[in-house]
Length: 260
Picture 1 (cartoon, rainbow, N blue to C red):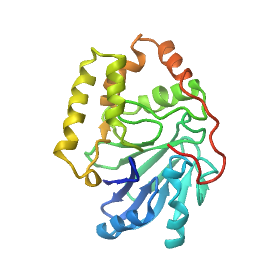
Picture 2: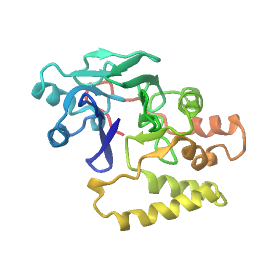
Picture 3: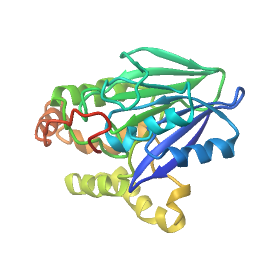
């Protein structure tokens, strides 16, 4: 399983997941279809499916154009507000693309219909991956726009937090530096946060071509270390309290609308 990271817009990520034996490809969160198709052509793969994490325009606005350009393309997601949706997915549903397995994990909080996708490949030594959209990012999580604090807690701790610790996390936005700077203010003595913040500050200087690189991929176990500040009181109540104080605004209902 090969994952192509495709930075687009101001700080978004699209992804192209390639089954290397069959050369079938699956895209995640298509915001800029022409850019995606450039990568598809360069890799010489057949794009058959789009997995959309949620309906916001910066994750789904390219679906309609992509379907027009590629008749027969399947667009999957858990929210009827997703552009050009072919079929609505259910929590726990499993898909198959060659040797690649996909488990659909409903992760409400950012939006009520947010779906994350857990992927692994048969007989492959590489670790599994989760495409978490705006539910989970490096050292943080997306804003709680539609769901409740209880739902967001369950999404982060009970659903994503129980994936294998070696799971690679591919998130929807590049918010690493801002998240770590906030984490350090909340928990200034967290050595994991200090080390990762130092790395994140140096990384862009080493890799100035942001279009070709990514800070986003991290192991799920590493995310737990970096987000321990969310539970600095060491309790479930502490996290629930913090999530309940997040801004809560009704999400837009129109298709292809909304934002990160």
